[in-house]
Image (cartoon, rainbow over all chains, first blue to last red; front, side, top):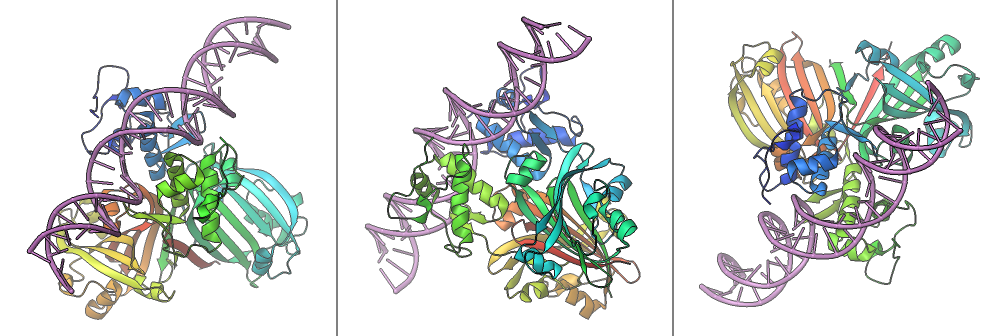
Length: 255
Length: 255
DNA sequence: AAATAAATCTGGTGTAAACCAGTTTTATTA
DNA sequence: TAATAAAACTGGTTTACACCAGATTTATTT
């Protein structure tokens, strides 16, 4: 189990630090991490392939993969299936106490937001959804599924439910922009209260598919229930975020 | 790649669902997940050993481990090193907009909180820390390291920095309870503003060691900067949480 | 009965090899 | 030149071992 060190030319990934004894994969991890943090590798830059890293580091492929998974869990790298590993860009900062939507806070951080409408349809409320909206189970609801991008990278998929009594004909409007604005401009609905929950989760099946990530990647589930001034539930939103794309920031005044 | 199904006696983990074709480890995952969610396995119950699951499911040990890692990432199970895999208990709900501390909100959820003081000492402020407190680099700071439990399970480690000008002699008080109360009762300091950041991270080295989890487990880093009514920074806190122990909930009134 | 030593069980890490299914590139064809 | 087919490459998944070190249990000794 001797660890070969930097031979000669081809790549930076040849040298392994001596740290993390007994855990070869952590050495490989550290080597890659160092090169990312030093700035050798820019955001969205592509890493050498697993087999290249393998010969470079002298480790078995499984060991190299363990190191890559580690870095992925830390949010330093991400992957495109069967294409390669890439350096994660800086996360978006999100302040749930502000009422601005995705489009505005991404733009404010000099990043390029984009929204893609995956589906828009009418559904029957499940008992849980009905309870949230104060409706009977089976009552109609608008359901939107959208995928949102930052700088061409898909960072979240969301499912939004809207009470059709408050926003009749919602599905006929442009739903690839700010929903908040549509509700305000066309239905004169202003959100007065937001109840937000955040919880680490795993991106599975549908979500993983929509974000084109491996099923099981860690993510963050953000759930939002919006009410208007009269206490009527306007919107129920479930956002599945890539875990490396988001940073939550709250500024609270107490007393 | 035929999947053997339930043979006869010993354990529930014998039966594999037919779902997730081509990805045996997802089948194993589903099988275990189903038994957890059905309530067959209570919180903190111990799973069969990897080698038992292996013979039970007919998969190789590596495959069984892939399934376990998956469940761990989802927060359904956790492990004690070289001891076994266990079912994760329900997460604690945390509302950053409330000023109550750990002790109170854990108790309010009928769970048993406990705080353990790991170290308390005086340190010299790094440039970053100095900038936060509005001090010169090298100025003295109180540093506390604590580990906090819910129902005997360590869920977070934190490092707290306090400005000694506002709380001289802080280290002589009981620091295993609510710090907020110590500051209020002994120094008449009331927090008027909290700036909180949350970000998925990996628990490594010190943190992993203190929480007795495998280095690299996903976690949530919660950073809090507390100010008093005069805008003086009272407390700077970094909390490393197990990712499966926390659920953030915020209720915001806008307008 | 309590302290100690040994055997056993558990997860942790690593290797080597194989095959699959998408992606990407290259060479070929229209 | 543009569309198409083939080859090369990439990660995805699984198998089957092997050895280690900490945790736990069992047997032994005091």
